[in-house]
Length: 222
Image (cartoon, rainbow, N blue to C red; front, side):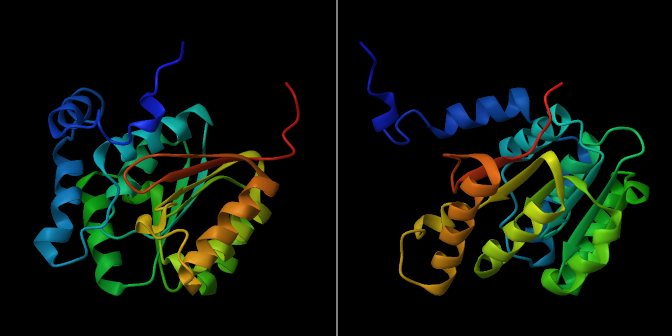
């Protein structure tokens, strides 16, 4: 008989357990640790992905053989390091960030990691600057971790500019636990979910705030 672990919520997720798997699978080097701690050091919001989520993102991109990736929402460059290290040789990441202080922090993090040549940090509101990146597409992956009220529009852009078989990955897919609320932002994130099931072979996994992963439909066999 199947057990009922799927109904037990976070009962298995003790701090010691999470620390153990992070230490084994997602241990920081100096560059990652500096980027992860940058928000606290610089007075920025501490809203970056967790170490295990960053590592999961990197593994997904390596499985996809990603060479051209767009990140929407840079913060201080922590996820950008994980992404850039996943790229195939000659690959490139375009990391889009609206806040000038965040773009500077991202560039510093990438400089510390020796990755500036592999990443273009694009400053500006994503919906304004994404059209300027379209000439580099189609892309192998788009990672979304920015303002939630535009998740539906970011998802639509990803669907249009990913290659068949390309990945869309989005953090905060649970919208901080408020996904089912009747607010404009929650509605936008739900529209993102509902459109993702149309354009992608998608799944949403239960990380602390949900990771949506989708494979762009239309992939050719072999």
